[in-house]
Length: 574
Image (tube, rainbow, N blue to C red):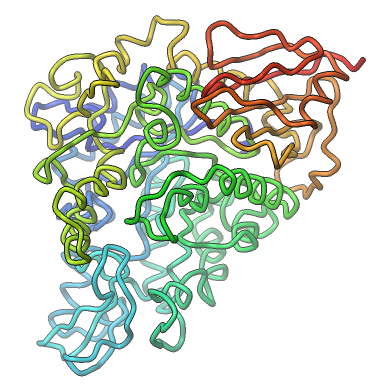
């Protein structure tokens, strides 16, 4: 199935729409909003986990892969969602959390009872209660191992202590997980997203990491490609849309995961471009965004994946990330312009765009100012860790306000009411708060849906452009003017189908080429010499501009205004 001209809309179900006033989003709430999602022009809906779970990590701690958590509805509700979605030509993608299960899962409970068969479903190691098998650190902070006194064993949890890592070297585990895929295929699912899937293959020998937190030993492990290929063959999902979330991975690995000839995944999520504001590489140390590094990473991954025949999933936001307009754009007077610029820069690159709920509205960070308002287990853990590092309570809260995953989990803003149209009850997490510079009452579906200048209308135009312009869906990409940062510029041109390797140096301006210019600065900036030459030597028309009053590009490249994004199409050469 072709996916080069498709767009995926991500729904974080818990925060999308509540149908029964319990303060949590649910399946019936999502079904009630399918008309809105279809109106965007997207093709697939990726739904975050709604399986039975104790919700220690908001559903990414699965206790039963084949049952729906009552908090989200019933199987009948899911079947109704599938019927309604198919009637609107929307495919449903499910989120498969196969690196680990909840410790509440029946498999783990059997392991705790002493059943050696099920102990082999997980990564258990014998050991002294005072000496963990390795010094690895959990992604959520603290040690990555937990001791079970009744067994005299440690189990591995790369994430929360209630998320025990599965042992993919056990064929029974791989078979059981394949059956999960087959079960949901049978209910009409059209695609799958695989959570941290490049961590599933653990090393043969566990050893201490004296240089880092252990990830270099378990990332992109020895059998990961073998196991993914086996899963795809066994379940018959080769022609389905599949995407893998890649944790701390490398370019060559993502080419391998997504090159069609390998029959593993359709595309990959990588996160290097979202670490450009990590001080010294640490998520919990604040730093100004390094736009020079951003340009370098976008160029490296876009042109590198193109050269290797791989395929990117394009995104700024998801349920684990702060809102990009707060992070790289402007929460104040230029909110609308910067949100549009960021959308064009991301969604017109080579790959498949993923729009996260509310991103199409320009939703911002939460702007919470009290620890009591945050819900995310990672954020709460790190508040304590940061204070142990010597930060004051206020300083630790300032870091949480910038970095918390809850920034992307506040309720979807349907209207300007007290609970933003998300629920008639008390929401599980409060809506984003207005600040002196940012009026949240203007950022919602009701305010934007009929406004041709809104962020919402701009996203719809981007989605139409990908479907109507082959150069966007399958054209090559070449980045221009490396030294012109904070202006990031790239050219889309020609025809380079998915899986066909291409050299960026061969991507040349021609009729119908697309030029995308993005100013990541809050002040006016000049474009670089390559862009100036292309503008001078050819005739261009403005397709989209993040400002309402677009400048003419008639032989001379004007300076880009603060946070301005411009999309130009070449009509002819001079």
